[in-house]
Length: 450
Image (cartoon, rainbow, N blue to C red; front, side, top):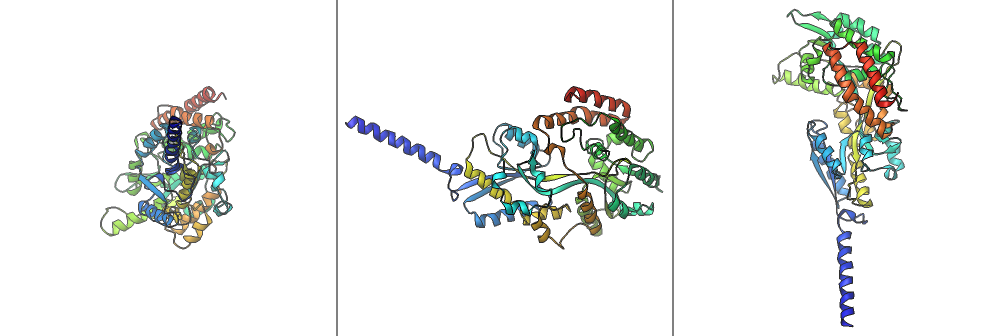
């Protein structure tokens, strides 16, 4: 009898210990239990770290039981660190990025639809909540709408008689751009060349923006059909080559790094720069102040945000998308309450006050509450803010939000392995547009079966 009692006592002790071990921390179903939500983010703008602290302080007034642990990553090393953590099955709960089908493919991206209240959905401006979705399912909350565009030096444009206000409001075709470029390309009194346009030779954004404005929203369309295999891509490549042949762009574009491109714009050696984002407006305003204060040497610039010109036969298409927080679970799942807590933090970092990021970056807001809170406090110049709004009306919704995961992965591979070396070969003059178009066609058939 004593032995049976001893056995029962030991069993009860084991059950009690196991229960205690499973009841604490993030696995608890108690909404008031202590929990920690980890956030990995970036210096979104100059004062974002302070902004983040304020948002978390506000959050903790209502949720003192949830500790928000943040880590500020560098733009250079952060993506690699995140990929390592994700592949190891231990990503942070929240990561600052646009949504990505490869994240969903891991099975660790947290689907958010069950946490979205009608009030949250209604607060998002039309078409913006979708920027955090993959195939109609919500995985992220956008903080702002990013925009890729071109930028101009108002003085140089006006000296050449370019009606930049009309371009901002009405756009321009490739033919109209070439006419303007001829007026903007000249030799300066110093003997230096002034180019119409400068881009860097290391990234894909230049050909992506131009091909998007020639009826090809991306390498694939939303149905997964290969696009870069007909006359439109040849026309796009030929348009780029003509810019260099005519001297509108430097013949040494292949060797131009992003920093050099910016230096040339600041030095007045180019009338326009690609790619430019609306934040350049704020950056250049700050640079002008530093010039006035004697901290920086150089000419002050009035920045003009310009849409990318479109093919004469096609409509304008703005390169835009959403960036904000994406939610994740871990391979060792922390439970449903932890997921709810993660969403609570996510919403706190994406709400009305978080609209300051869009305001600082002179980017379009994503929520009506942000529009209301920052009305009259805009940092960008009115003409450029209006231009950004016009471009937003012509948004080409990112194809990767509609593609299945395998197609999205194939498209990314095609860009890295096929497009990047070919566009560099175009810039360097090693290959003709015809050769590159044929390579796109043959490699596309191999990779996509089309």
